[in-house]
Amino acid sequence: MYVKQGCAALVMGLLMASTAQAECYADYKAKQDDPLRLHYGVMALPDNACNKEAAAGVIAPKLAQQGWTLLNVVSIFGPEGLAERKASAGAYFLSF
Image (cartoon, rainbow, N blue to C red):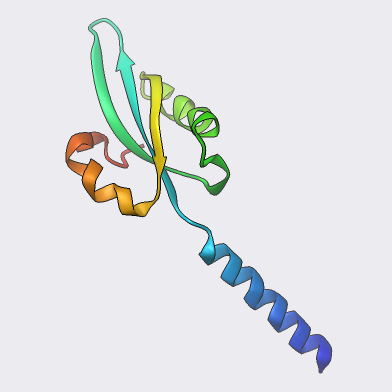
C-alpha cells in the first residue's frame, strides 16, 4: 500500500512540475535577401530555450527552412507579453 501511495505521489509531483513551468516566447527580427525583406515575429520556445542565446539556436534553423535569416532575438517573455506583440508581428505571430 505504501508503494502505491509513493508512486501516486511521484506521478502527481511530476505532473505538477510540468504544468508549473512557464511558457516562454521570443520576439525576433529576420531578413531575406534579393530583394531585401524584413519581418518582426513572435515564436513559442521550448522550456530549455528561455534565454536569448538558446532561443537563437531554436529560431534560426526554423526561419532558415523558410529562407529567412535571423537578425536578432529582441526579447524573451511569458504569455503575458503575447497580446501586446500580436499586432506588430502580424502574419509572423506564432507562425513558425
